Image (cartoon, rainbow, N blue to C red; front, side):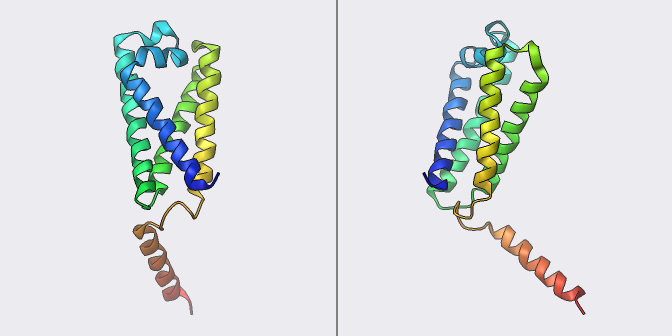
Length: 147
């Protein structure tokens, strides 16, 4: 499977997880946080907000792939989200069910690893215009300081 196909799988998985958190936050969040915690109204609000986050990042990545546009920003957004999810799960420790710690810890860590791998891929779309401008400016600045 090439990097673009992997990125598409990552995007679709993120969209599916986000839709699940939006539609049935108590059920999906119950796996992570425990059913009693995830069924509380305030917790369901936060779970839905996380769902929107994942839907937006997933749709952004999928749209960028479909349009052959730069994907780096969407991958970096996913890296940040997954990194925070993994860290928060780790920090919660025994306050979360063991199955939730294992599942979300593994999924979030895998998301970080896959996102980091894909971010480095040159096949993810054309370089972002701002990156090219930055490189040109840096090269110009270097020539100004060279004897």
